[in-house]
Length: 465
Ligand code: PA5
Image (cartoon, rainbow, N blue to C red; front, top):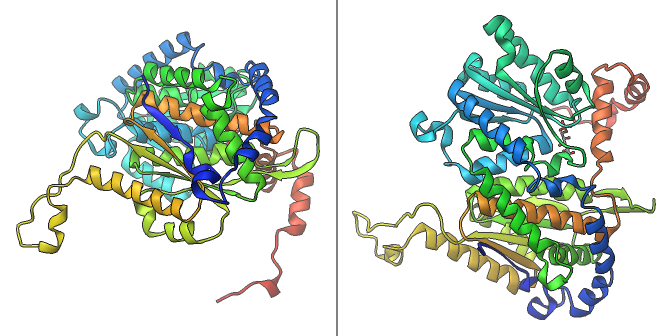
């Protein structure tokens, strides 16, 4: 069933002019494709996230049971995690659930209220505690490394609250997902006989949405996990083809890496769908953290990558489009459109005369949003800015599975074109280490000393008003 399309015509010089990609540039870049394809095939085992749509029957069964148990026994479900441990759940929640899910009555929702806490902003976590009863809340603590300071701090806070409210039964409200061997959370789980879900080896945080990291959220939200995974499998079928013109991930990766080399260093993802807005947030992490690398696999300094930007149609037409159209030729825009929305809103004949607006009467917001996307794409194209369009028939578990897997494959392929390690994140680690040092974690004393020398800003560079 074809229900997701990728139209790259407006990336090409023959359609948009000199700032597009020429046939000669495609031919030149495609010389690397056999090597890229070979490494993508050989790397399949190493990139264990590519097996997730195929090899999780037992885990999915357990996850569905756990989701059911949570919905039968708790009023709220809170994800505690950050980065790749949270963004996939956000994308699934918005993509597959009612946009005011938590405000719906329980019978309509069909499950626990759903929250994601991916920050340590004190007022926000307290705001959550103001509206939930922790004793009636299931917490899903997700950290692949098992050491992440934000998640572990939240875990400690929640555990103490639960112990205070529930006494010895406090552990039953907490569900854990982490590495099978490494990390502090692993140790805690083992020492306390806590059952955990596992983030498999070879599944990095930003590639983990189809592992228990995202799937437990999906189960609690009654999302059709089978449709999600079958969507990913269908996209995988398309993204393992060797031919550039048959493989959307290779085409996306090739065009983007050609443009990166020409100085197009910004990638805007602009869904015309509130349901897909968090997909852009998820994509931003995937694209930024995977491709933003100081050195390539040969150890040469390359400073590769492209800055991803989230925009939302139609809202950002009134804030960013001026820049996209008339500003520098440093960006490419991916429009994401939806053919069928779940509901239709018709603009009625108003109760007072409005002759100047009569042209809108009887039209739908569905037509308006689609027209705005077409119009904006036309404007961006006529300004010679490279852009492409992903269209989904409707936003649901199956199309979301395809979309997420498409971007994962495109990112992995782009990393191969760039010759970098797509799957590490030394730049993130550096910040984590500095935080450990500043928070006094044993073993980080040297870093703490270094930081104490640089922490203060000189008075002469500071305005105090
Ligand atoms: O993609 C990644 O690896 C990161 O964004 C991680 O998901 C993020 O840093 C959280 O790490 P962890 O899951 O180990 O707590």
